Length: 125
Image 1: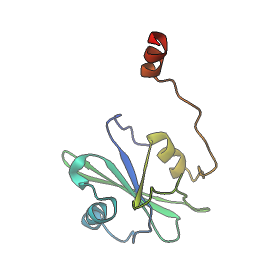
Image 2: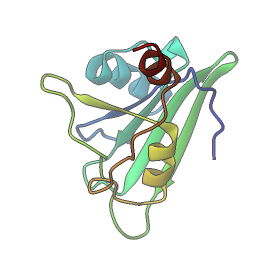
Image 3: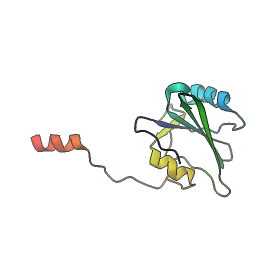
Image 4: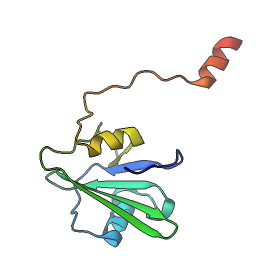
């Protein structure tokens, strides 16, 4: 799978996209649906209407990278619904990796994480 730096954000379109589109078509979908610049270096994912295929678009300094996954059985599911007024979902790399494997994350929940800033505040209070 892809190894991504922590600065890369991952966006997935919440509405189906015609995956016959190539690099330029998905770059246009990134601008229209996700409202981001496809040249930003962030990762943009799109699912087809039957939800059994996924394309990921990523800009690298030398050009676009396109990753295509087809599930033989099952469907891709977004881990959560988009915020009101939004047409995309932002996710973490771990969520994307599980989603690519066909795992449905809708019922999963993340345990509370350690946050160093919370510990500093608690000690000084």
